[in-house]
Amino acid sequence: MYKIHSERLSPEEYIDFLKRTDLGSQYPAERFEERIPVLLKNVNISLSARNEDGKLVGILLGLTDFAYWLYVTDLGVDREYTHQGIGRSLMKTAHELAGGEKDIAVYLIAMDKAVPFYEKLGMEKADDV
Image 1 (tube, helix red, strand yellow):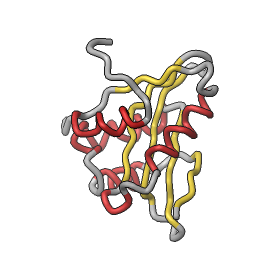
Image 2 (tube, one colour):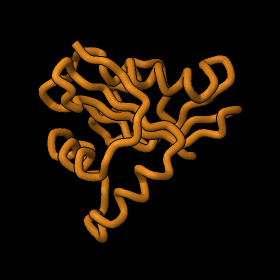
Image 3 (cartoon, rainbow, N blue to C red):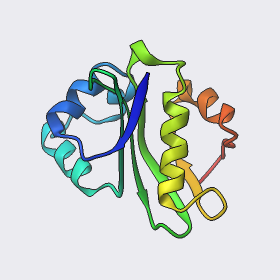
C-alpha cells in the first residue's frame, strides 16, 4: 500500500532513494551533490509515493507550463516496490496536476529498459524531439 504526496524532497532523502532505483545512473557524477538540491528546488511538480511507514518508494519530478506540456525529468520506483502501479499512479497524478490529459502533452527521455513501461501507458516512442 502506498500514498502519493505533492512535496519537496530533501536532497539527502532523494539521493538515498536513487540508490534503491536505476534512476541515479542517468545523472553525471560531476558536482552531483551540488546539483541535486538545485534540481529539487526548481521543478514545478514534485511527487512522492510513500508506504504506510512513510518510506519513500516512488518519485516523479516534472516541469510544466500548466497549459500545453509536461516534461517528466525523473520517474522512479524503489526496486522492492515495482509492479504495484506506483509509476502509473505517479504519472496520472502529475498529468492531472499539470492540467489534465485533454490539454497537456507529456514528454520525457527514457532509459532503454524503461521504454516498455511507457509504452504500456500508451506513450509513443519518438525518433527525434
